[in-house]
Length: 138
Image 1 (cartoon, rainbow, N blue to C red):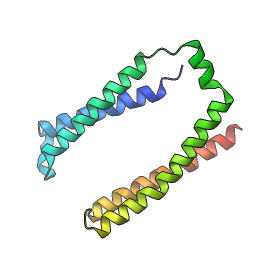
Image 2 (tube, rainbow, N blue to C red; image 1 turned 90 degrees about the vertical axis):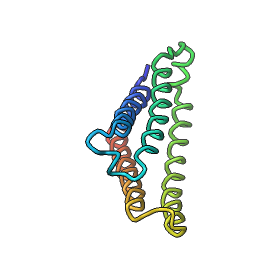
Image 3 (cartoon, helix red, strand yellow; image 1 turned 90 degrees about the horizontal axis):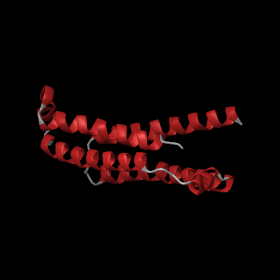
Image 4 (cartoon, helix red, strand yellow; image 1 turned 180 degrees about the vertical axis):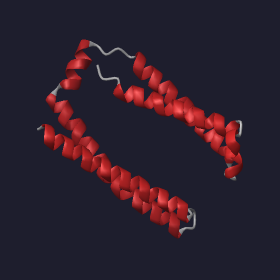
C-alpha cells in the first residue's frame, strides 16, 4: 500500500499549522511583516485543518485486495499517467495566463508575478526530473 500521498498531505498540513500559529501569536514579528497577517492566519488555519483531516483519513483507509489489484493494473496506471500529464499541461498554460491577467488588471504586484514565475519554473524542473528518472528506469 502506498501511503506517500497521505504522508505528504499530512506533512504539508502540519507545516501550515505551524505557519498558522506563527501568524496567530505573532512569533518573531511575522504578523507585523505582512499587512494582512490576521487574514493569513485564518487562511492558513483553514488549509491546515483541511489538509490534516484529509491526510488522516487517507492514512486510516485500508484498501481492500480488489482496490490494490486495481491500483496496480497497467491500464489504470496508464490512465493515471495520461491524466497527470494533461493536468500538468493545463497547469503550465493556466498559471502564466492567470498571472498575466492579474498583472494587467492590477491585482498582483511584482512580487506576486515573481511567485507565479517561480511556481512555473519549479513545476517545469520537477517535470523534467521526473521524465529523466522514468527514462532511466525503463
